[in-house]
Amino acid sequence: MENQAAERKKIVFSGIQPSGQITLGNYLGAVRNWKQLQEEYNCIYSIVNMHAITVRQDPAELKKRTLEAYALILACGIDPEKSIAFIQSHVKEHAEINWVLACYTQFGELSRMTQFKDKSQKNPDNINAGLFTYPVLMAGDILLYQTDLVPVGIDQKQHLELARDIAIRFNGQRGNTFVVPDGYIPKAGAKIMSLADPTKKMSKSDPNPRGCVYILDPPETIIKKFKSAVTDSDMEVCYREGKDGINNLMTIYSCVTGKTYEEIEEEFKGKGYGDFKLAVGTAVAEHLAPIREKYNALMADKAYLEKCYTEGAEKASRIARRTLEKVYKKVGFLPK
Ligand code: TYM
Image (cartoon, helix red, strand yellow):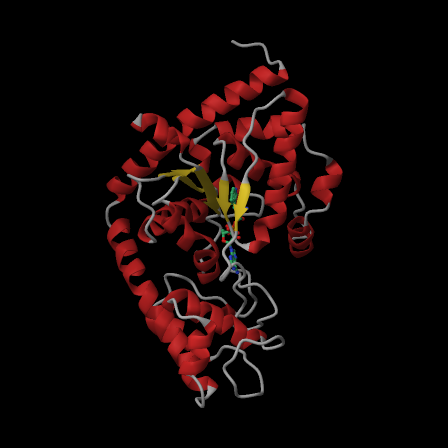
């Protein structure tokens, strides 16, 4: 009975690229929710290093960042006993399903992906085929695990919708094979904006280093970045259209303190932006301090990390293999 109940638990899958340091945007939009979802669902989380090479990476740096990102998601509260946490390239089924799904995805669909358009504009000398078919790899990540829910920030919504369309199309043509996944996009924090230009998403490629806060930034750096955050010329801490900088800071403050916008407005009535920015910076630094500490401890124990990602890959592979075999059968590949 217990087993049956466990089998009925919904499945959550999500991934993060190790293409740089993990940002406050990654954390508030996604990883923070990954932790909470573990209590209720069967969660599977991956460091998607295969996605990362769609943009040129220095190999030694990628290897290093992959381990760091893995340690960091554990430091953020992903428990390898409760969830499956693995590195994408360790589970070869991701590459294998990618081919089949690519044959069920239309060129036109991929051409409409806004992230492809953005990234190819930013890297005009390397518009490789992987960058173009990236959303198929992502659909494979999700569909391999018969995922019900995908916790991501808003920037991944279009990719997620494509994954749904591919699943529906495959199921329609080949019979029921995949669970059609739903997104899990948080109400607050789904799009954290740059501190330097609050009309743009916070991202590691921000041209202004003050725009992006990293989870592992030392407290003084975090506070300094918040102190220099761009706001507006009126003086009121309130959530209102047109006040992009303040709205962003209120969202961040609300995410890390649990306070509502009304409570925040009340707290800063009659106070200046300087006080508010300092309070947000301090709250973020305090919130992230235990994560940094745990990260440092984990990075000092490489054997433990290796054990976790090895076991994680074994568990993930067992699930992924079942789906892949089903898919191969459905498309008519002669079994070995
Ligand atoms: P990536 O590595 O760019 O980002 C990881 C997660 O962080 C979210 N995010 C943000 N959320 C709020 N505000 C921001 N400024 C911000 N910046 C990033 C992203 O939405 C994401 O949830 N393609 C994915 C990785 C991926 C994946 C998957 C995700 C590969 N396969 C399967 C889910 C399921 C990506 O590049 O995320």
